Amino acid sequence: MESWVRRLKFYGVGFGIGLLFVFVFFQNRGCSWLPGNRVKNSILDRLLVVSDETAEILKKKGIGKKDLIQVLNDGDVVFGESDKNSDDKVYVIEKDGSKYLFTLPFESFISEVKVGGKASKALTSTNGYGQIWRFPNDSTLVFPDSTKLVTCQQDFLGLVNPMDILKQLKKSGRIDFSKSDLTITPKPEHYLTFQLDGKEIGMKMIWYKNKLNLQSFIIPEDTNCE
Image (cartoon, rainbow, N blue to C red; front, side, top):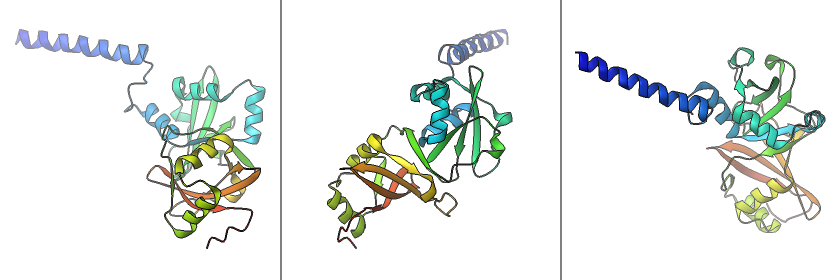
């Protein structure tokens, strides 16, 4: 009996040291099962967008893209101030005394960043444009429909390879909130744009199996695609 108790004590000490390394030295980054990190992973699985208005506020505060990513890496999720019980969740993350709101619209592939206010009153923007500050780390993120229309449009634009579409999005992509409808069921519709040869190309997209499913391009000229 004594040897069993001794072994249990040694196990407890070892387990405690392991937790100490994880929580202190690795700052919880190795614990994807922790509630706070699960929230952060849900945000990082989406496109992180910032409205033009919020971008100006962050700029005045001296906060850039890298700073915002650090908020997600090192900040604390304030569950008591978050709106976590509705379909369109909003989480408050605090770092160095500052609080940021991250929206998680239901079945949407975006998370919009907001500054100030209460989570219960924070809604994803419905007007203006949003800048895309971060993409998930997935080279096959864009998945075009295999319809005749989309295939023809890709050929017309010279973007047959989906990775080339993603490159254009990373280069000049934005979300048009006014043309997006995140209330549509079963899948919200997103309207993203990018610049190609001086022209604005639009795209209607939904979130499907963690991919940006491209349903059609909106091209400001006749493509003869039907």
